[in-house]
Length: 90
Image 1 (cartoon, rainbow, N blue to C red):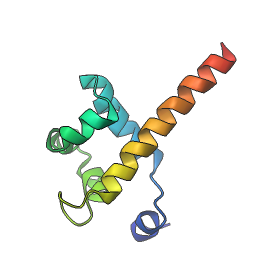
Image 2 (image 1 turned 180 degrees about the vertical axis):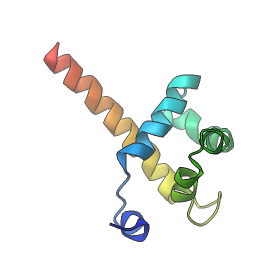
Image 3 (image 1 turned 90 degrees about the vertical axis):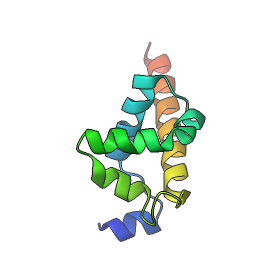
Image 4 (image 1 turned 45 degrees about the vertical axis):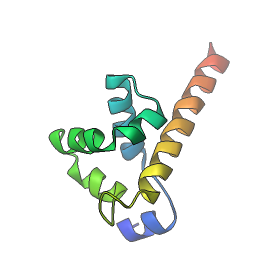
């Protein structure tokens, strides 16, 4: 599996959504707020040594939002899935 394949098939690796979720939790941001604070999120990724994730999210530069928006949607879906699973088990 290559980066091009991932981008082409809109697959968002768990590491990407987990990293975004950690930042969202740190600042208590919703997915919408994450989008509004995009530059801060990118800076956080680079500071955490995860610049490769920022490059994955913005393959055409910071104005190329398609992959970024898809990742935020996947982050929310995975978060909601975790909540539903914990409710079912609890």
